[in-house]
Amino acid sequence: MSSSKIFIVEDDAMYGRILSYHLSQNPDNQIEMFVSGKDCISNMYQKPDIITLDYSLPDLSGFEVLNKIKKVAPDTPVIIISGQEDISTAVELLKAGAYDYIVKNDDAKSRLWNTIKNVQEHLKLRKEVQSLRAEVVQKYEFSNIIKGNSAAIKRVFKLMDKAIQTNITVSITGETGTGKEVVAKAVHFNSGRRKQPFIVVNVSAIPEELIESEMFGHEKGSFTGANARRIGKFEEANGGTLFLDEIGEMSMNMQSKLLRVLQEKELTRVGGNGLVKIDCRIIIATHRNLQEEVKKGNFREDLYYRLLGLPIELPPLRDRGNDRIILAKYFMEQFCKENGIEMMALTKKASKKLIDYPFPGNVRELKAIIELASVMANGGIIDEEDITFHSNSSSYLDILDNEYTLQEINNRIIRSYLDRYNGNIVKVAKKLDIGKSTIYRLKKNGGV
Image (cartoon, rainbow, N blue to C red; front, side, top):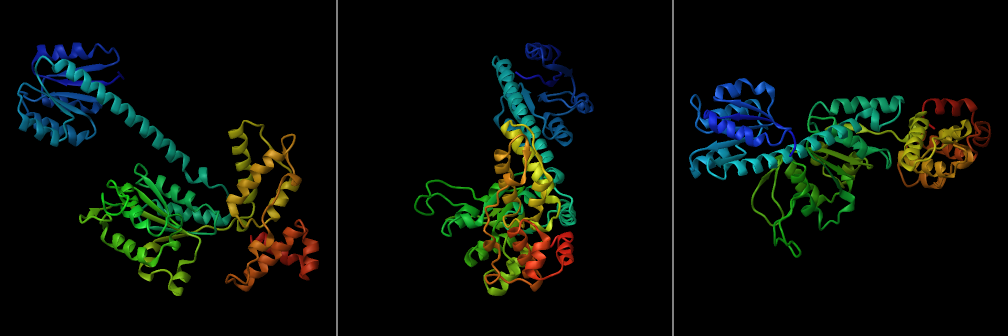
């Protein structure tokens, strides 16, 4: 049995000493006795872990003492000990927040011992959960999960700081691999909802015929295979945050149902009739331009404005300048620690190779490249030949398949040539018949 500070509130001195002696069989327990409810209340500053409370006290009733305790320490377990075997009184006290109701009889001591043991196990688990949550919160501090000091990423930090101050809906956009889920987690675990659930739904990964049940839950027998009631993601996230990833892939039919739930803050499970109230923060993410999807008729305009909230656009890695090196070193250190190998270093040529590459797969691609390079390297040094790029340059020169500005097309062409000629600016300038200063200027501004 774990150690605890236990208050015994009992006006019968003899019975109080019996309880004290019994609970003191665990030498780690710290017992303090009080003969009145007022004495107990005035000593709540000591923060007891458990209180045993006599129902019949000379100054206050058991209900009055229980209510006063719950006002100053709502989470402190209170065990009522009474000489009356009154079921209705016991039920009322339990409804008022008592942990248990024990009648003073021959079994009282053993029952109290077992009840306190159960309380202590529960408190131990609660402390472990609180400790783990504290670790999670620390883990998701902005600077711990998003590495970089470029102007582009500093703008993201400022928006994230705004997001954690309220429960406003957050919409995160950016290319695949830029870290949208990481940002969503950071916002949640630094917000006032940090102690509540963070639930993720990848809309694109759920078949159309199952998404309503996945989101809103279903009742037993509502369809073939529904053998039991199932709680949906909205209910799982109650009090916390629901992260809807790739929201742009949601069908129009499901968009209508989602809009209603967001407007009414209540839902009906599939096959059910009852309304379920919900309270969860919404964070969405997409690699699509939802405004363009609205114009094309693929996304509801009213839902778009309902979800827009505070927009955070994540910059592609190619626009983050020296962040590529900061991230590369971070991934390298993490990989070495996790695999028990010696720490490595990047040579200047390796760093230059990383800076000159456009990273169409963004941060996710950089991580994979660095982990492979860490395996291929010799002597604790990652050199340029250890860094292998798997992307085909044509995969990101999709000019005809997407709508880009003329400047974006120019930048993509220059990036492609820099990749093809290993970052040789003189050769690229000659091949494209442009001035070297144009390329230098674009590199300085993060354009290539």
